[in-house]
Picture (tube, one colour):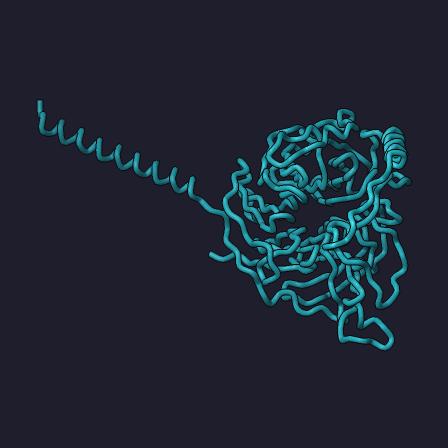
Length: 427
């Protein structure tokens, strides 16, 4: 027996096995330390708006097939001091009220616009038609527009009644614009000015009257109502399936799916994949405190997006969570993000990285003013982009997020931000 040869063979085998083990360990560590893509702000985008326009708060953002950007803004956010160029004669060089829908190309030039009622959420299809969630007389719905003419060509089925207590913000009353005169500003309904008296609380009789009106409305329009009942928070298109997804804010939020061609209702669900018939009208099922247990139903400001592999990511901003289901509403998993966040919540708009597998989630955060980068598989937070501020690359009311085919990120801000920004990938 050749013991020297046997010993040498065993030593070589151990060396090979050790090398393989180190290689496996290195691969594992690399996977664990993998980070999200990196971005830098493009300070030259967009170019100054024409016609002395001053943009209002951005409530919708979409990229078309040519990688140009549609911006849906709130002209009613502008104040008197921002509209002084409209007066006759003008008393300042700037500004004037913009249209609510502005088309901007990749270089930052305005290439089109039209002026639908302001609202919340939008999408654009491969033929260029615009679908936006707007409000007319306080009643929200998704309407389809021809961008060349600015005319509405279709709308989703919706109830004819306004929810009790609905109003303000996107659902503000439609009033004629008086040149040179604006509103109290984009945060007037959210923040009490320093020194202002506290808002009076309704007396018991007024509270009882409102509660009765809400109960009557919910009895008339139960959660199974197969049309839009509340306001729209988000609009998404699944063109291969010819389906339109709308986030209806009724009862904290309902995911509603319609045929994209006929606008006929197809299906819908609530939190954790609850069937519409399982959604409760008890507001206690929507109660939530930061770091507390998740509410049974969606709490509020529901946005969504649909991945290439057929999953629906519904971000319940007021509860700091992302609900993941199949396209039929079967619950898959839940991601909880920045659960300490109060007031406006953390989980805003949902976008995906541009790779075929859509490995990362990009989440806009109104309250913490970050873009969060998450592993789409497990929801693990990898990094953030941005902080509160008014410099380029910072955010003040980060509201909307969109991506183009090359992975460029576009953002839209409300509150004091009232602007769009462009972030390009860097190595």
